[in-house]
Length: 266
Image (tube, rainbow, N blue to C red; front, side):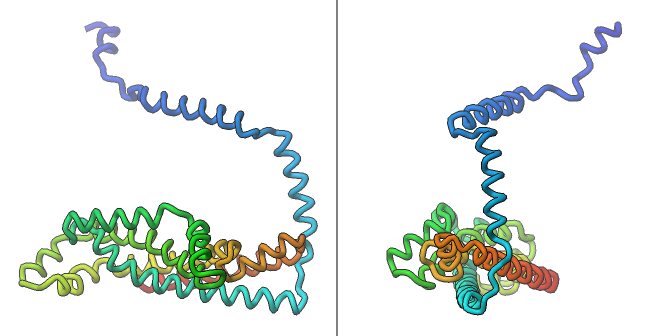
């Protein structure tokens, strides 16, 4: 066999993936098209940098007046209360919903019904859900708590169901072979395998609820979001910076605490 015939007969080590190439070309073309119709220009970007620099300059120094700090402290305490209550009730409801959505434990009709409900919970941003609850129950912390409970259900239930589906089925089968009922199977075979991951999901959701409690407050869901939005409207950018610094500090502390809790349960 000649060298040319040998090269022709030898399979290509890196075959061309034309489907992937066409997809990347299509994405590049669409990106250019979307950029053109959305009025995204370099001039606007440069102007935005200048406006942003002026905005940041007006933020400094942060406002540390006693009356402002008292107002901010009240809002942050309410935001923390919203996050704690929303996480507690959201996780409490996510446990049975996640078990119902696990296809290796629940019958198919129940699992798919639960997954459909979870998909509904995940379809809307917490701010949108908060607007709906503000219309239903009025302004205040209750609307924010209910909105974050819905958000927690959508996130924790989905991931918990996936954790249950990934567990080792041999332990479940061994407990079932003893004639144990469904509750005993959960206690003896399911929970020991998944509770560490469930605790991790809970802690992560608490972090998320702390951040989201700020956003739901902007639309009337209570917490620090209302003072933050009011400060923006009044052009009190030094107060805005103070609120942002406190939010960042609280989230960093919560991240450290949550990391310690996750290591304990690993």
